[in-house]
Amino acid sequence: MAILLDEKSRIVIQGITGSEGSFHTREAVKLGTRVVAGVTPGKGGTELDGIPVYDCVGDAVAKQKANVSGIYTPAAFTPDAIFEAIEAGVRLVVCMTEGIPVLEMIRVKQALKGSGARMIGPNCPGITTPKVGKVGFMPNFIHKQGNVGVISRSGTLTYEVIWQLTNLGIGQSTSVGIGGDPIVGSGFTDILALFERDPQTEAIVMIGEIGGTAEEEAAEFIRSQVKKPVVSFIAGRTAPPGRRMGHAGAIISGGKGTAADKFKALEKAGVIVEKNPAELGQRVAEILQKKKI
Image 1: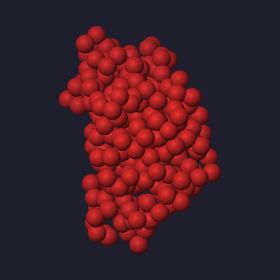
Image 2: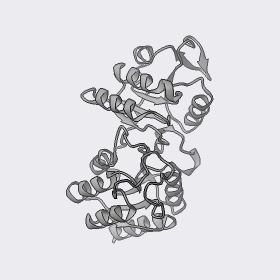
Image 3: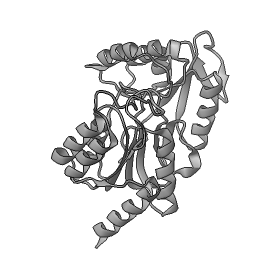
Image 4: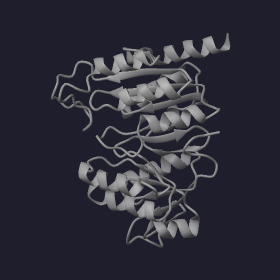
């Protein structure tokens, strides 16, 4: 069983004819992803490597039964692209675009309520389920099918921990980059709930960052709702208060959002906290070995 992407996923790429959209579509297809359509207004009736391009998502849903959208559109057009996908009835929206204003994301969150759609991102590396496919930027070669779920606010550290796991012979069930903006479509708790219910996933890696309270909320959720072992790392321990680190959401403000606070909350919830990102894979290997004994 896979979360988010499975054998029924039929993907439409919004912004498919742009440089990022076309490149990452081709990479996804190489991985075996079922991309059934693309969307670029004004380019309807054309093709990309045999993939039909439509003027709107509604046409892709009606004609190709698309049910997952990958968005690579410029930031100025992305809110409307998200609304279009939601209104077309797409069940999963994965948005890689960065630079979406917070006010626009508030509108997006309101549109998602009661829509039946789930959103990953924005400003994220996307999702990958080995042997099924991917939507996003994650490199093809780093993945291996297996039983460890990965959730991360950091794109680069997502790739790092996946590659560590693969080199240790440990495969992944699904890897999800939730994005580093202050407001995202799905947070840690949303994806943790999916991994907890997923019979394929035996352990979870959660990579957080300074800023906000998402990790503290995840810690409380893990304490009360998650029985599977969780290994976590928090990026940005050395960042000074008031200084943004990388992502728009990675900023310590009002005395909240420090790495120390997040480490403390996670440890209290029974999470195995690793302060050296280079050792994350080894911690997971130790957990899986104990489960076998």
